[in-house]
Amino acid sequence: MSDPGSVDTHGRFVVVPAAYVFLVRDGVTGPEVLLQLRQNTGYMDDHWAAAAAGHVERGETAYDAAEREAAEEIGVSGLDLRFVTSMQRTRHADAIDERVDFFFTSRTWTGEPRVVEPEKCAELRWCALDALPDPVVPHELAVLQSVRSGTTKPYSTFGF
Image (cartoon, rainbow, N blue to C red; front, side, top):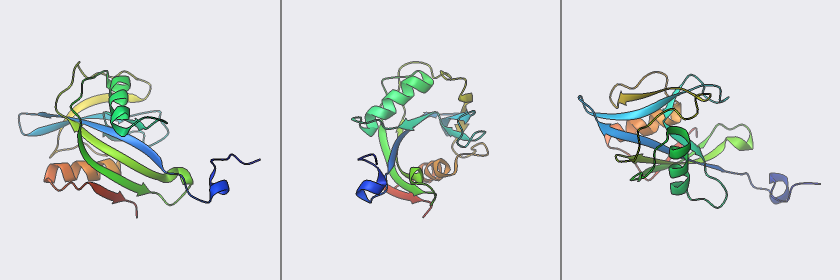
């Protein structure tokens, strides 16, 4: 018997929501963003990515998910979240590859960012927005480039 919420029952694809947090500070040469080097996650390992990000859980807002992920992944709380963009993206493969991502920045927080999940994060690094490490997860790089250039829009797409 089919799951009542499955695609084959209602004929629609499922969109997976996620929230991303870019901590930003003023550095010596300009704005810096805190990035993590992913490892052992099965997705974009050995790529630099938002220091905190993850799926929005049932009954949770994207803002709530951003706060939760920041606490779980880098040990900070009290974020002053600023909405950057919502990104609809696809890889045109499995239904799991239909995504809606909510990106936030925060310039203030409580606590010192640290690696809380060392099995998933090899390193945290403050990086100048105009000199990002390579490689960065591609859809996140697109957002960081728009933040750097001041061209962010409330809605963006990737992979279409």
